[in-house]
Amino acid sequence: MDAGLRGAGRETYSGESIHDGAGGMRVLVTGGGGFLGKAICAKLSARGHEVLSYSRGDHAELGTMGVRQIRGDLASFEDVAAACADVDAVFHVAAKAGAWGSFQDYFDANVRGTWNVIAACRMNRVRTLVYTSTPSVAHRGTRAVLGGNEQGAPPADRFKAWYPASKRVAEEHVLAANGSTLATVALRPRLIWGPGDNHLLPRLVERAHAGKLKFVGDGLNLVDTTYIDNAAQAHLDAFDALHDTPNAACAGKAYFISNGEPKPIADIVNSLLRAAGAPTVTKLVPYRAAYAAGTALELIYGLLPLKGEPLMTRFLAEQLSTPHYYDISAAKNDFGYQPRVSIIEGLRQLGIWWRKREGG
Image 1 (cartoon, rainbow, N blue to C red):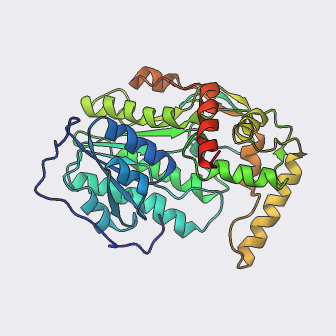
Image 2 (tube, rainbow, N blue to C red; image 1 turned 45 degrees about the horizontal axis):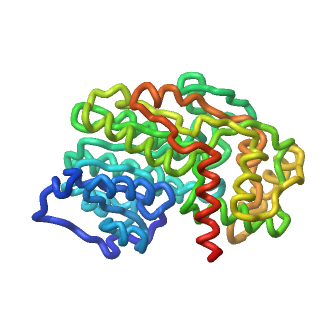
């Protein structure tokens, strides 16, 4: 979340039971207007829970779901604490993502924001906190991860981008906060895609039409991804286990989440583009050339007041060219996560959604 919304349009609720509705709980989702946050809100609402979203702006789709929206700044403890009042559980999904930006922006949103969420949960006696982390906390340059689990692919010590660095710190604090009064868990969904994506896929389509997409390396490096419904379901599965049994097997732990179907990155990207009716990608750029370009662009953007973000960074060059797929057995065993939507079915659903989005 960006700063500057402190206290803006904040709503408070009182005099209502925290056990309204068929689901019997009031649940707060930070970043409820985002891709994953919105999917989590939809699933919670479908269960009959009273759902609140805490984000930077208003979102019409959330209003249609009956989700109550609170505008505020993650960096403001006052705002976060007010949003957590009379709440049974919190899904902390909001974060500043991306591969470029200032240290302060990432620290305020991802680290300070998470500190505030933890403190607000404790102050308001919230029982359960489900945190959305990222597999990037385990990113170690060009070191391949071939089915690594949480022990075999531990968090890294050094990072080339503020996003994974800040998320690692935040994840550590969430897991350390687990205890008798607040049960916590961290999930690391890998590359989420599907209907409702207004960021990744539109950018891929735009660049594909402009002929600006290239694979770093040979495009054959295996990666895993997560269909949006599966990512959201994993959060609810972990919540169910944690909220029903505070000493659940998943309490105080982090888990990799994906579809469990690793594929070459070229196959994944081109399948997404086909679903959107966009040109596929065949061009390649050597890893060393991409890394060098990323190094140069980071230097230029760091020295000059340029808008936007570099087309390539060192972190992106490593991520796009290195095999990365993870073992999700722990999530299956500890809280019953099962990817219910396959990649093939997900692509079919994505194509239907995209055509409707484009008016086709």
